[in-house]
Length: 310
Image (cartoon, rainbow, N blue to C red; front, side, top):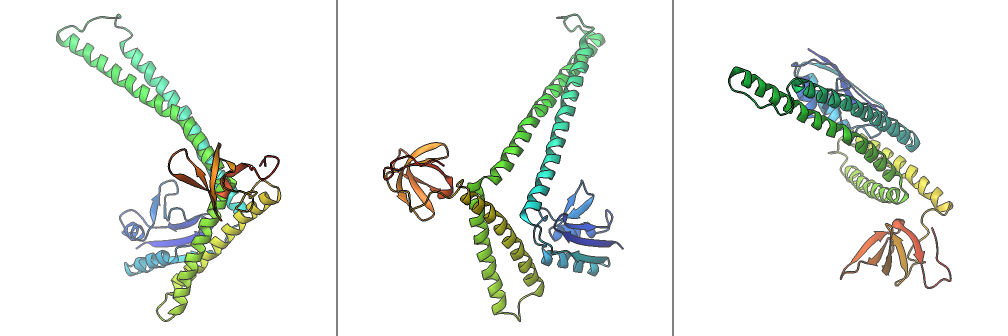
C-alpha cells in the first residue's frame, strides 16, 4: 500500500506526494479535484497557489485513501502572503514561461530549417523538370518526390508555429500589464468585495445552525476570508496611492454633468447621465453605453473654464 503526503503552502499550493501508477491512489485524488502535474511528477489542485486550502476536498481525499488501505498525512499551512510578494512570484513564473516560449521558438526555427534542407536534399540529384518514368525506377522517383513534399509541408508548419511564439510572448506581457491597470484594479476590488460579502453570508448561515455545520467547512471559509481581505487591502492601497497622486479617481457624479465630454477608451463621448458608479455616454445610435468612473481619462466640462486633464 502507498503512503501519500498532502501538503498546502501559499507558495506551492496543494500537492500530493507519493503513490505509484496503478495503485489506485490517482483515481481517488482525481475524484477529489486533484490533477496530475507532469512538470512536478505529482498530483495537485490547480490554481491553488496563494489561495485558501480546499480543506473539504483535502480531508475527504485523505479519508478515502485511508479507507482504501493506504496511509495519508495532511499538512496545511494557512499563511497568507501579501500582494507584493504574490505579484513578484507571479511575474517570475511568467518570465520563466516566456523564456521557455522563446527557447521553443528558436528550436522550432532550427527544426524548420533542417526539414527544409532535408526536403531539398531528397530531390537535388534529379534534374529540374524531369518527368516521372514508368516501372520500378519511376515508382521510386515518385515515392521520393512525395517524401520531399511531405517534409517541406512539415517544415512550413513548424516555421508557422515558431512564428507564433513572439506573439504569445507579447500577449502574455499585455495581459500582465492589463491586470495592473488602475481601472482593472478598481473593478477587481469591487468583485472581491462582492465575493467577501457573499462569503460572510455563508459564514453567517453556518453560525445559525452550528449543530449541523462542518468544522472543516468553517475553517475553509475562514481561510478564504483571510485571503480575500489581504487581496482587497493590497489593491485598495494601490488605488489610494494613485488617488493621492492625482492619477486616479478624479471624476465622479460630483464633477461630471449631462452634456459634458469624457474620454473613455481613447474616444471622446457625450455624457447623457452621471450615475453613482458609472457614466452613461452616447454611442451615435439609439442606445447608450455605461462605463465605470475608473475608465474616464479626461473631461471637457462646460461648467469650468479650462479642460480638466488627467
